[in-house]
Length: 119
Image (cartoon, rainbow, N blue to C red; front, side, top):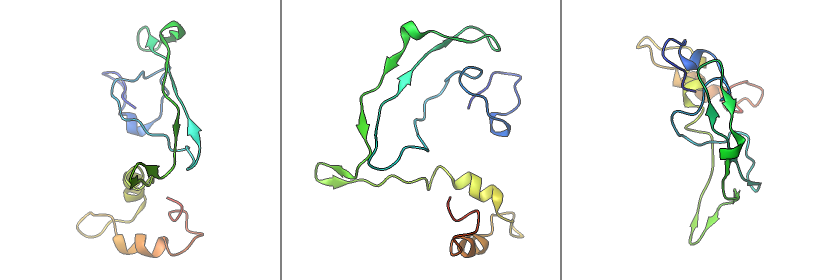
């Protein structure tokens, strides 16, 4: 989500990697399901802003990964808690101190029909 100098901030609008190529690395897949097995193709985009083209000859694939909780003697849980924090914070009314109202959040998660609850 990193644009080029002169672009509007990336957080205000989405552009895929055909427009804004990967310039920083933070891997996450919000659509991966627990128990699923996934691998990813990484395709470099070459060119200049507005004229990027994929170079499939340089593409690389990742190892397959199954999202389960067992890793040796440890168990791991995957969640979206950290990922969705900013989106939730922006959706909540603010307190007098300009902080997100945590009381509203606590009430929202009790109601499965509240649009915040699935986050």
